[in-house]
Image 1 (cartoon, rainbow, N blue to C red):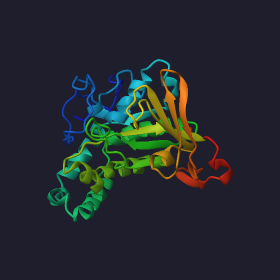
Image 2 (image 1 turned 45 degrees about the vertical axis):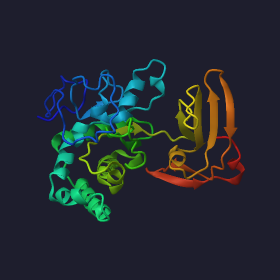
Image 3 (image 1 turned 90 degrees about the vertical axis):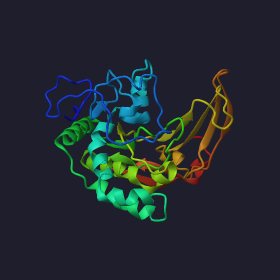
Image 4 (image 1 turned 180 degrees about the vertical axis):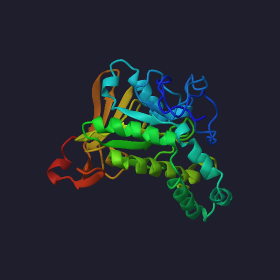
Length: 309
């Protein structure tokens, strides 16, 4: 039987039933998975788990992004700064993954994924992935997330991939999966489908080789940030563990991570508690939430280019 919709709620009446941990459809790329110390431990399977669940799920169930957020929620003094949201687990996508990899389209594409025909064949796989039917269990999970989104102040979410093979010890898969920002409750299903379909993009197979993927996703409350960035707890430029590096810009962090701006950069001495380096980037544009959902790119006035974000 399929697993329940929500973890930490095994007694709730549900048409999905209950289940214990077991292998799920889709083989994970062997060099990419980041295993936690307890990643092989049994866990209660679920298609959906709140990020603040009392019993966080392992990486193999929710991927590295959701697993890290769940750990942050369990960290005293940190949880108040983590946006609300849900992990949509590997079990949610397992039937879809199995349907694609059992299809005639997959049989035709798999031997040619590394050839010039690969991109065209992958587009066919993505179209197939986009039109797979929703089960009753999947529908119940999405309804749960929609109800939560309706209570969020902005009613908007970020839908991001959190595949088990992402952010691994051997591979990052940075930028190869789809991200949807400013997603409304009405647009949730379309965003989930688009993110799932991206697991069959030719960039994934160009990066990791031909393999049967597994997939999970994170749905988080969107913050209409005036300033955002990326922080590294160790300096990636010199591997110094005593230094923290932050790249920042105006608006959402998307313009920082996609390289569309020259971001501000700050290097902080964690031991001495002092700023070691500060460089102001040009920051010619910013990405902001649009009033009706989605995002928009705005030009930044020249008078703000030289101002620290």
